[in-house]
Amino acid sequence: MPFKKKTVNEDAFKNSYLRCSVSLSLSLSLPSPPSPPPSTSTSLNISTLQRGAFMANGTELDVTALSLSHNGIQVIEPYAFLGLPRLHLLDLSHNRLESISARAFHGLPELRSLYLNDSILPAAAAQLSRALSTQSLPNLHRLELAGNRLKSMPLMRLDIYNLHALVLVNNSIENIGWENVTSLYQQRRIRVYLSLNPFRCTCDLEAFYYWLKNSSQCPDAGRLLCSEPEAKRGIHVEKLRGEEMDCMNENLEAVSYVFLGIVLALIGVVFLMVLYLNRGGIKRWLNNIREACRDQMEVYHYRYEQDSDPRLANVAV
Image (tube, rainbow, N blue to C red; front, side, top):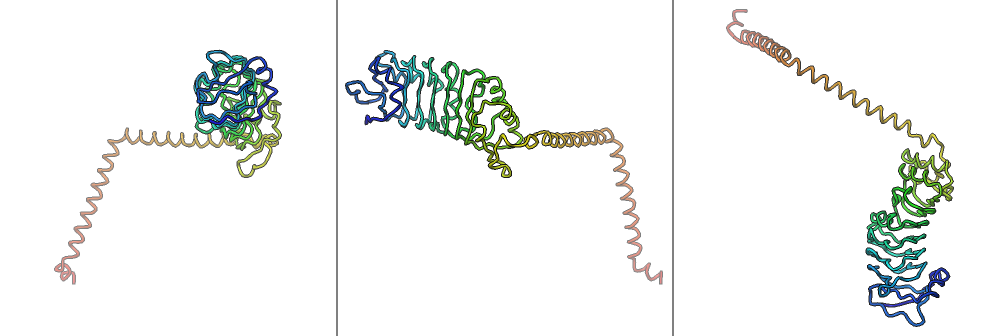
């Protein structure tokens, strides 16, 4: 497999490589790093990060920053980053992650910054929330997930994290639910970046709208635009009028329809009960009507026979 060079934040790694010679054992048939030790600007074209990929003969590496961007990584297996206990920054941007284990980031207790920009494919999006658990990343301060077509926040409960910055720019988020809004109110220190998302400015966005108006936790709030409905497309979310986001009228209309349905259902039940309780009288009434109709039909039949007899016609003449 080719071993090519690429510049990846050399200053961030320089101190680590001065302290030790790092050999990345990726459980693949890679050529041995050249001597002197490889600089931090190297890039490994790999598809799978296997368990203990960074363990050098069972020895932990004294590395504080690691960039694996633009490597075509598709799978991160459990405990792939064991052996990096002092890692503070991990950049996995611009890969093609299809599978992320729930224990992919176990063994990174000191990780502060995790970059996953333009890396998460739809198949891995559902696995992301489990992989980003507080058990794996207790000290995570910055999480970047820009450009991943995410439709919702991958972290349901922000209040259990120690995040200071969450970057969700350029995704497919249409709404921020009230659960996330509640967590944002509780975590005043966190800053959330949400520009270039297609927000659906309907009644469902009410909780997020009022959070945006009353909070300074979204630094790019002025760049948040409505994409739907058509009448509000291109309008800044924070510049909408309060009555446009007021759900009271819609809720009252919905309640009115529900109440009307309940009343009609009760009327139907009462009507059926009346029929059931008076079934005997109704049956007699129907029988009487049937007998009366039968008697009347017999009278008409008799008169018809009398009028149709030709002899009676001659007598009449």
